[in-house]
Length: 263
Image (cartoon, rainbow, N blue to C red; front, side):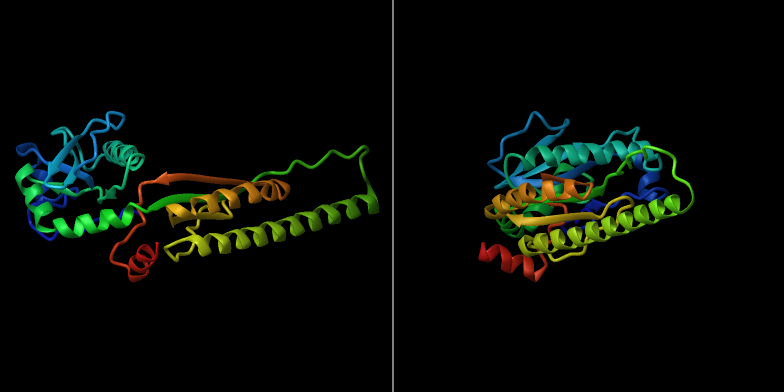
């Protein structure tokens, strides 16, 4: 979930399908601000097409919205989200980046800069907090286990006994898989800056986003190395990806401020 920095000024436009602003879309050029970086950040040519708009010691990652963009078209929205993520991901690899909500739109470059100046010190403070933080995703998938074929067809009591054995094996495997997922979650909670419950996803025993300090990344790598074979033994697939743009970061949360100071 993307968490926006709260801009209260009217010059930031929240575009929604069917809105009056949306109906006037073809009469104006708007700027989408994807995120913020420090002013000394270099323009990243590997990111999708964008501009790095400098404002004192801040840099805004912006794109112009095409006049053909249709806010009611799911394909246009999907392309927009993909470009948004690609820009943030590219800058995440070279330094702290503060993601803004998809839909953080401004009427002009002057309006955008005015809002950045208004909260300049706060944005710098947040980027300082992010300089020591990384976000990762941890997922645990059950894999289908193919039963070995019987040497000969079973009938009668032997068939019933074999079916009961398979049923017990599946039940025991599921119990062990669930226990492993709970143990792994507890380990992740211990190193995560942000206490949270895992997101429920069909077909996944665990789907969790964690924010950790950079000096804790080695512990996550060690946990992955130890847990991978255990997962395989339980017919599970463990996937840890990142670092990602810190979408789950919320600088207003007290525990986040305390954790960053402690780091």
